[in-house]
Image 1 (tube, rainbow, N blue to C red):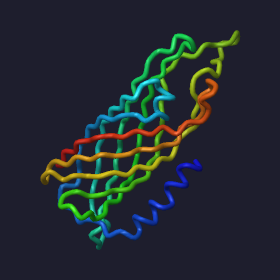
Image 2: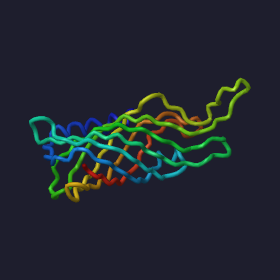
Image 3: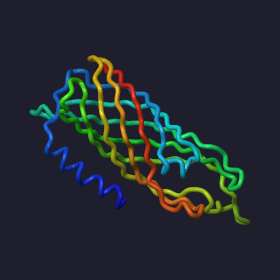
Image 4: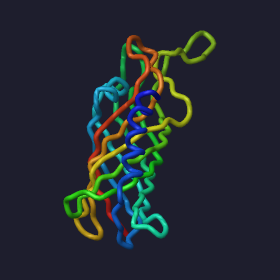
Amino acid sequence: MKTINQLLAPLVVLVAASPLLAQEELKYSFQVGVGYGLDSLEKLTKERKVGSLGVSYQSNIKNTRNVYRINLLWNSFPGSFDPAAKFETSLQSLQLSADLFFYSPAKDLNLFLGIGANNYFARYSPEVDENGDPLKKGVAFDGTKLGIRFGLDYRFNARWSFDATFNLTEYGVIYRAPVGGVNPAWIQLSAHYRF
């Protein structure tokens, strides 16, 4: 949480001080993305692959030219089966995020900053004790976790745009020493089709 707070405060100030880009009438979009996990994600899944599918709604803040985007994404983080600990390291998440756009010097290239809420789902089969209760050998996380995101969005035409996004989220604790607490991060490339 401390890492998130340190990054979030300057981003909020930057967004508040930035004029945002006006948007055309096409407000909804489908998106598909692929990504590359950084070291913190690899600690969880033992892999760096990321895939996502989602929908977005983009519009202007009323009576302004300021643009915002609301995203609902399903993220997949494929892992592998860990034979030593006897559990699967694959993860999935459902992410609800909100982005704010602002001007950049380049035509059709826009910067955005956002915050998100992430609900992670682990697929693992932990060992059980004599009572049938799972042993704490895998991962642990409680409820919804916060995250930040920022990136560049390139508008190819009225229907298509492409973005590159850096994501950083809270997660929880891995009960395999010496990993401990983890904040997964990944870079994602996405294509949006507006309708």
